[in-house]
Image 1 (cartoon, helix red, strand yellow):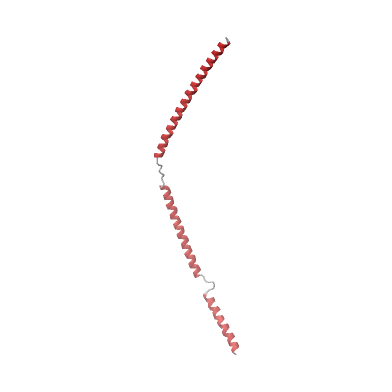
Image 2: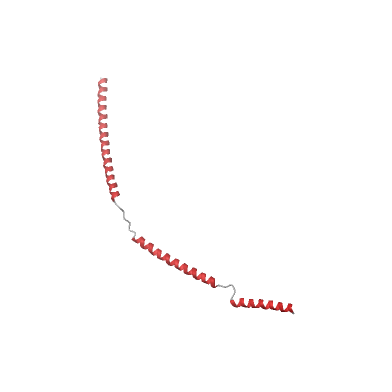
Length: 121
């Protein structure tokens, strides 16, 4: 009787194991099919992405860059005008006024003439 019971138990166990294996196999096949469908969708999306060209609207940036360039040009011109004005001022600048230089030269000549007159006498 124990042997019969063990055989029955083995049969039931084998049937249960086979049933579970069939269920797992069905689940695996279902998951594989879902995975394959997902891969197919991704391949389609990848194909669309390769064919899609993205065009950027740069008109706003171009106008901003042109305005900036105009401002920079005006600043550069202002700097150049200041620089040339400054150079002209430096060229015109004199350490001593003309009248002071003339008086200095005249006083030196007068001094030299005076010294010569004193030694000549």
